[in-house]
Image 1 (cartoon, rainbow, N blue to C red):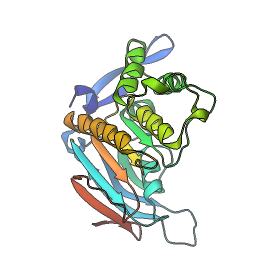
Image 2 (cartoon, helix red, strand yellow):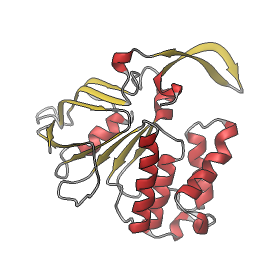
Image 3 (cartoon, rainbow, N blue to C red):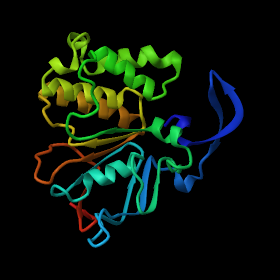
Length: 249
C-alpha cells in the first residue's frame, strides 16, 4: 500500500492557492485497516429496533467483502455511514485509523461510494464534463486532473460516449459512467451498492478488472446486494445483516 494510506493529516497554518497544506503522521499499527466499523448503531425511529445494532466489520488490505440481506435490512444505511455521509448514533468508523469527523477531506479522498440506482448524474452534461466535475469535487491535485479523467475513460471504455449527454444514454451506459466516477479518484476503499444493476457482461467485466487492480494495490472493497443475487465472485468474506448485526453467510 502506498504511504498515503497510513497517514493522518493534520492542518498547519500554511496555505497555497487557498488550500491548507498538511503534515502527515503515521497511524498506530492497531488501527491500520482500510475500513473498520466498531459498535455502529443507527436508529431511524425511537420506538423501533435499531437498523444497525452495535455492528462490527473490518476490511483487510487487499480484500473484497460481501454483505447481503433482504431489502430494507440496513445495507445502504451501513454504506452511507461508512462513506461518511451520515453519522451513526454510536460507535466509530475509521479509514486507516481516521474518522471522518477528524479529517473529513482526507477521509473523502480515500473512500468512494457507488449508491444504488442512477443518482449522481447531471442530465445535460456530457460524459467528459461529468467526469471532469467528479474530478473537481474529489479534490484531485491539479497535475493529476486530466490524467485521472483520461484514465477513467480508458478503464471503462467510454470513448464512444465521451460527447454524449447523460440524458441520451441507456441505463447500462449510465451505470458504467457512475462506476467510472467511483474509481476515478483512485480511492483505497470502494463501497458498492448493487453495482451490477443494468450492467451488461462487458460492463461487469470492466468493473471486476477495476476491483482486481484496487485489491492488488492493497485497497479494499465492500459490496452490498440483496441476498439471493447470483454472484460468482470470490469474496474473501460473506455476511448478511440480521436484526442489525452481521451474521456469517
